[in-house]
Image (cartoon, rainbow, N blue to C red; front, top):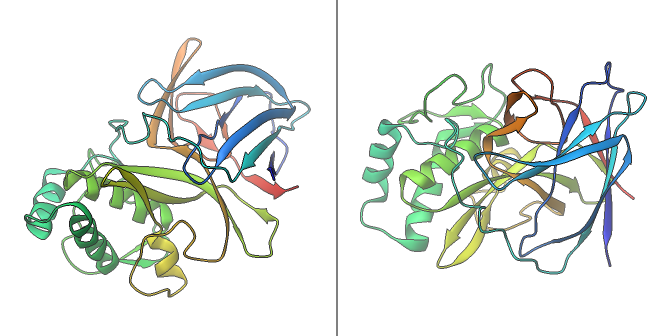
Length: 272
């Protein structure tokens, strides 16, 4: 049976500047049946210039914007662009990270190689917030050679994607929404990674293992009981809008689309 998730601005927009809302995609765990702009005026549907990720360009109505998405748990086919790199600094391994992963992973391949990289990530992170996001302001993702470092799901999984790519593994950063078991309200912004292993997508949520003490990370779509929906993929997306280029570090929920840098706006997701 389809599940409807309603996304709305948590607080009214203070001006009429347009918003971006990422269009969810199909995965082996979900199919997107419909997407409907309930409040606001949909101006266009745009595709990132460095990815196949699409977004709705929405003009808020009276400061409000609401989008309903109907999901089915029927298996869908993931888009061909999912594992492509955006070329952004948060997804690209630095030379130092490439050398580190090469030394750690050695001649392993397939699942063994993925496991070795995940073990490295487990050892380098504790769940916590940083003053500045990992990789922010860098030309590429730095190497975490020693010690442990605080990181949210964004830091941990951005590093994980760059580390997997340093190990020549196809990986994707996925932004989504997670509802804990028994809850019907959440906020988009949780993320995880997909890794291509032996021709199939394998999901890892390292941050949930760290935050909730679930032990060494194991693959799985829901290591913590609850319900999740994949919404968008990729970091450092770029959208060509009329007269300007818009950079979006993370496309989660509603994003203010004025100026040259998109700003994520507080968004509430409701199971209805």
